[in-house]
Image 1 (cartoon, one colour):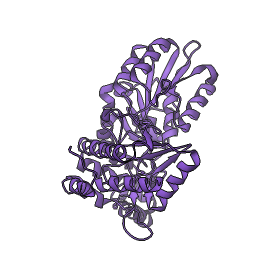
Image 2: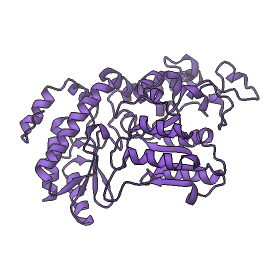
Image 3: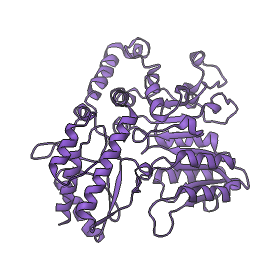
Image 4: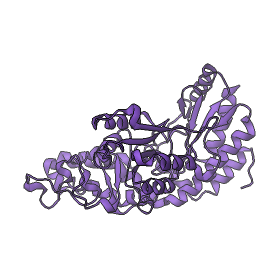
Length: 424
């Protein structure tokens, strides 16, 4: 697109945006002096869809009126409640409905998946992760290695970018897998990296890992609802995600899990079992032996938290309405516009550490300020004082995510103007 630095260009883009009406489906935090804030923090917590309060209030009313009978007699019975989310999640994950389930939280699901898919033995006990993995993933992986009696100092393989580079190269990941594959039990990487916003080539990495006999899983916290996924076709073993970022389900919302169809009926796979993963037909007969439900549902432990799942009934229909491909197309334009404005106005004041290739990133740009740590933090605080929501990472990085569901081109223009002012 022919881009202009003028505000009128952003307004013209918004006027022509076929998805612009979706913004009205969300609550936008207001500035102290009135008017919408500039909210570019969907990579941390998505905005609240306006339909959430209605759904939650309905469930509270059903609880008040029906009590225990709400499990069966509610207009949305609680017993199969999570099943209402399956088809939409499957579309976003690029999966079959059998392969996905809404359950638990991300790190709990990660441990459950490792119980089944990390099967180390002497000589093949290693787990491959990225050096800058989100801390919860690092802790979970290291604890799994220790739980199985191995030492993370030798069994944890961390891959880092090349010297002087901020992001990983797919060819370097695959080369490491080919070099160390015989001692790698499991490859565990993100779909989109939380700090840099880099989008990983899941298909290529999975292909490399499976050639070496490794199981492979992905943390999709920053990928699901952000970029199109094809987990089934890519032959991923497992994946986990949270729902409070791009899926807009609220703080502490129920997470999700993918298990490939080829494992659907592998009853011999070891797992940590719970009664909600037991065969639905005999679950309430309380049998002594565990018979898992085929597919991802068989990894459930307990009945789902209704009030933590209900917000997805308001947010997922918005994805179905828009379509992830259309959202991605808008996201590419929004993020490219943000990159262009930053380079046009502030190229000497910052470096964008997110890949410049649009296909190698999600909707996030990570911006490293050319300031001392104290000055960079002061600029971030100045943004907050102007009603700008973004994210700070030590020592000098601001993470910004123009989310296509509710962000506008004008948001992007206003952010760059506010950052320019803050740096002055």
